[in-house]
Structures are given as C-alpha cells and as structure tokens.
Length: 107
Ligand code: FES
Image (cartoon, rainbow, N blue to C red; front, side, top):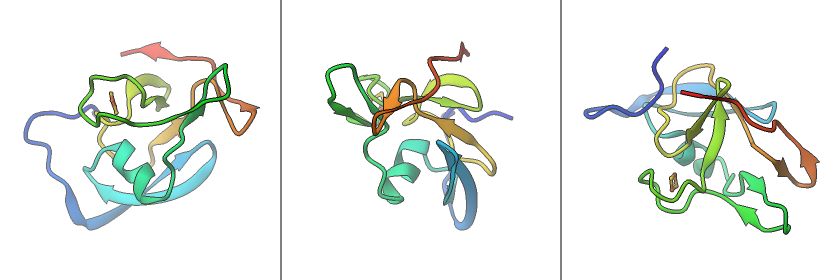
C-alpha cells in the first residue's frame, strides 16, 4: 500500500476512511494528508519533546520535520502521508506524558 504523497494525488471528499492515532479511531477524507486529517479531528499536538513543548505540523509541505510520526510502522512526515483506509498512526516520543513508540523503520 502506497501512502506517501505523489504528484497528482487526489482528495476524495465523498469518501470517508477510518484510521487510528495512538490507538483511538478517527476518520478523514481519502487522499488528504494525515496531518490535515489529524487537525480536522482536533489533534494539533502530535508529540511532546524532552523540554515539555508541544509539537505538531507547522509547514505542511515536508520541510520542517515537525510532523514526523509512525505511519504503518514507517517514520514519515504526516503532511506528506496520504490518508487511506486503515492506516495506523503513532506518535514518536511522548504525548500527554505517556511514552509512545521510540522510532521505526525509515522508508
Ligand atoms: S508540517 Fe513540516 S514537514 Fe510536515
């Protein structure tokens, strides 16, 4: 399954898909970025760094690396990952003080 954004990717607003983030189920539009789907579900903080600062998507174009998450076990920029049915998305580091996955395979 390919979920990294490709030139010409289309968002299908008529098609809702479900995905999980840190074990909870959410929905979004097929083809939108994972970062946008999370924001649309009210999730703008995707991890907490060592000094307690909240981090999340910033540039939405693949440059800042602030949106790095594990998507189906791969470490990718959430703003560049295309939402499809059944994606498993996890924070890297910690969120709300609870430790999550420490990393993943690079694509
Ligand atoms: S929001 Fe900057 S790389 Fe994704």
